[in-house]
Length: 360
Image (cartoon, rainbow, N blue to C red; front, side, top):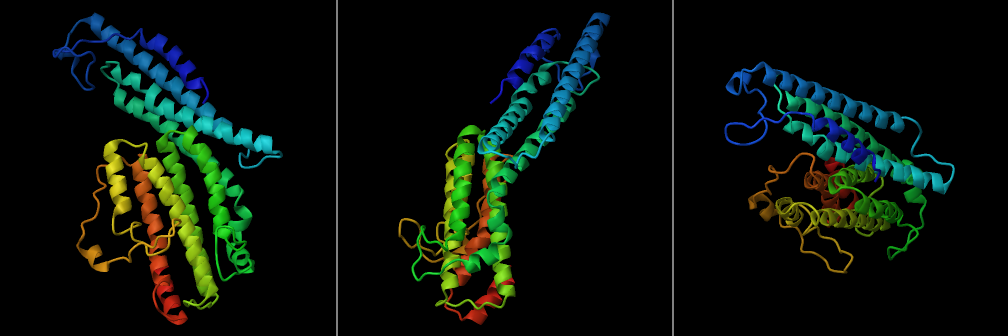
């Protein structure tokens, strides 16, 4: 976390203190945007003070936009996912975390005092919205760079996942230490990065990263399944490859469900209730039909319940909230749940291949 936003805020406060507040008829300070000046006072003095307020608001907003431009220039200054030494790579990662934290505070905290300044001709709400949008853009670009850093470590594995997976040694009994457990290595790498990010980012920022990393992981693995099918490989209950696919899916699901539960612990109580209800919903993960890390096998999915149980209402979640990000991630993970269910069917190789092709 850098001190740039707070240093900037201390300078902004000097100018905001020059603004003239107005006491409305209900006793509250401030003047709602769009309120006619005649309804308050017709004096030239008040008109002058409001114009002064508007010049200050415009100047502060422009300075904040200029600051966002500086952040953008810094993001364009180098390839953040590259580094000649481990120390440089770590410094790059720390810088990106700082940019994400800075822009989050500038957007959600330090731009908000402008809304309290009464004006006549300038819609302060739109001025602040433009400032927030500028920092939101930088915030999202820094998140993209973070994800690139994370997946640079996984580039060789995920780029040619099919050949790496097929070349891996096969065994009759699988464990997290098996040499052929390719996705276990992928998830372990994500876990290392997520452990740092979860404690150093605001929960909404971490939620965005978790969602996008999860989406990439799921999409790449489903693409891998499609590649296997395209090679006319038959899936059957005696095939080692089915066991390996199940192990991969179990690993991905269990880790990202854990991440979602960790996020749920930190979001507002109302969002937490919605999120946990989604996790416990019959559509998703309370009954996936595979053996979890504790060795327990959940009850098989009841398709009748799926038709009668009402879906969880997620309409009250904010689109950018961490909980909302998790709900979207649940939707991505559902593809893996469906694949797991198909692989658990007592069908021969041809039938399973046909079903999987339909799903994908």
